[in-house]
Length: 232
Image (cartoon, rainbow, N blue to C red):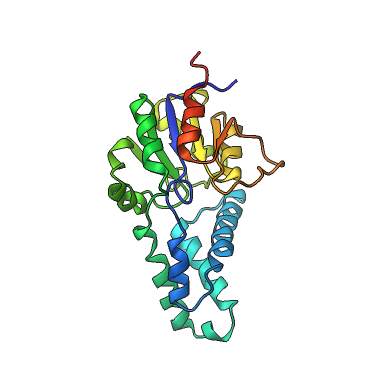
């Protein structure tokens, strides 16, 4: 039975930060806006694949490789290697400029005000999110910003979740993971954390994954559901 968490671990990309401005970056290099979806999915796929065979690469390196492949697949416009590399650099330079979703600050402040400890755990670089959190005025709400670069295993492998809660000195069953990704909530649940899913797009939760303990259409709704759980 899930408990009201002492610690909430947040995914970052798409959960807290809005990736949609990267569509403008793609368009600026003459790539289609919709390429963001398949590129980001390919980045996750390749990171997961490396983890599954006991290997590791940083998010930035995996994202670069996946974007090079995606751009090359667009045809003659990206046949020139130098042009591809310029486009890759331009698109990736947009990550530090991303902002948080509009619903994020209120949800974070509600949790923090309720005495719940907050940390992030990202498959990407922990430092990339600093600007987004500073601009939103929420950086100081997080006691730590963690990355899978330490355990060198991408989520949803169990090691990153268990490492994160261990670093914070909290048992897994007294922590929760909030994410928009069903694979992430599933991984956290299998590692023993309470799982919380933000469904901003109103899509069905994939039946192949463990159902999340709480769900909501935005972060404040998910926060209230977590705070309503039994404290025993």
